Length: 271
Ligand SMILES: Nc1ncnc2c1ncn2[C@@H]1O[C@H](COP(=O)(O)OP(=O)(O)O)[C@@H](O)[C@H]1O
Ligand SMILES: [Mg+2]
Image (cartoon, rainbow, N blue to C red; front, side, top):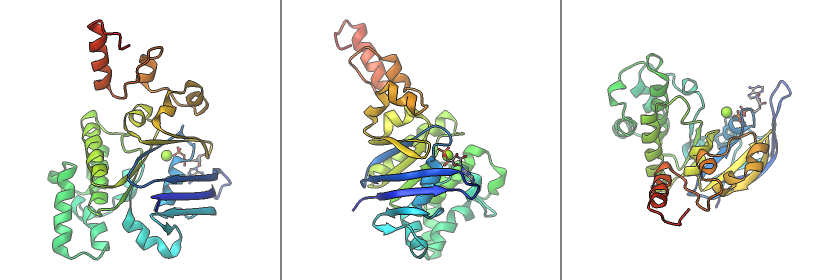
């Protein structure tokens, strides 16, 4: 069974904007997937189909074997944890802890289990000290952490994060990267929408590039080395691709790049 199967999906908003056109794709389970595309390419519209926030108008979407349709939404929302682009859209309780408790309580878990999950989730994103604060009185980065805690407390199998790194300071961006790795190694499938090509290049097993609501390309993150393709997608080349252009090496992270430069400085013919 695939994590996601999409067949011929199209979606237009009520003002007539065609946001998705004939999208077909499949995403295996237990992979790190990045949806890339310029602003307005349809990333958010697509992701919102994965938890049934939007329902297919044309075509179909299956998540973990379940058709995304009205009568399956309860099941789908147990399976899919969704971080919205704007965390303010998903925080509505009187305290951060109550917000994080909302999902697990909705699953029908007993209060003791809810309490344990809330405590663990707040610890995982380092905001235990904010538990009693109203979510509207915290910074944007903290709101993002609170929204992520709410998702972690649900223990969903498929995690869908829309622009998770926007508005985060570098410290928490690094923590979030490590957290994503941990969640992945625990067996989850993780889908991210981003226009951060450097992050996608370092992280993703599979990338899907959207342009004007259509799939422009999909494959391994090697695709991001293709200057013509990136130009067509209105995206920058990853900075490490630009920096190492003309060499035969393709470091994915600054650490790998450092290592290569160190070898080069020792006269190695590696680059
Ligand atoms: N609520 C909406 N009503 C009308 N048009 C919308 C709405 N939300 C998004 N769009 C339009 O749909 C297209 C895809 O947008 P979106 O999915 O948000 O792209 P992305 O997340 O890649 O920036 C864009 O042209 C955008 O302007
Ligand atoms: Mg978006």
